[in-house]
Length: 294
Image (cartoon, rainbow, N blue to C red; front, side, top):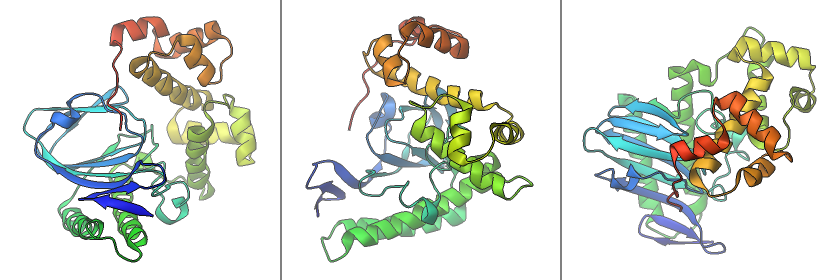
């Protein structure tokens, strides 16, 4: 059961934001680094600039849609005044993992470290998005029978439309291979890495989870990503380590332990080998910044 305040739904049991739809006419709310505990779809309708998501910079122009995963740090730097719409939803309100077979946005729109977290909103998509957002806005204003179910249905359509567009615009987000089984296995691999990177660090463990041989998995990842399994696992660990070094005051030992490393010194060597800088120097260079939390 949810209660609503203007265009926001709050979960009565947890007090967390469940669903929110809002507009913006300036980027002040995005200037500082943010790290929310919910999903964010940010549609830049007007303006241009650069976005920093997970320590990578992306240039954007009008009609760009950003898809940000919970706890993924991001900030915008405008070159022209920004206008747009923000759609936020909590994992408890709509679980992309639970609805993956229906929506297939996990690993395409969200939780995808292999392609940019953005896509171009075409003219046809603009019309569809505007209609969906208006329907969501109207529904969130009133507390009526099956409000949650109807909002989830609108959200599903929005996510499916955006996921299809990104897959077309960025084939690397969900590209096929000659073997029909490979796209499914590789998508499942990305999901498994996202779920288990803190506890499973070896290629063999993921091969076991996928019920294929390590050799076959190695061939797939090399052909598809031009990377080894070790590269893929290490990349995800390093991204999380950078987030923790940049956005928290945890010690290197604490971060190492959280990421499944009992030996702080081994972790520091692993970080330096993959990031070309030690954890301590990275933190000192980048600087400690508190994220604006939800």
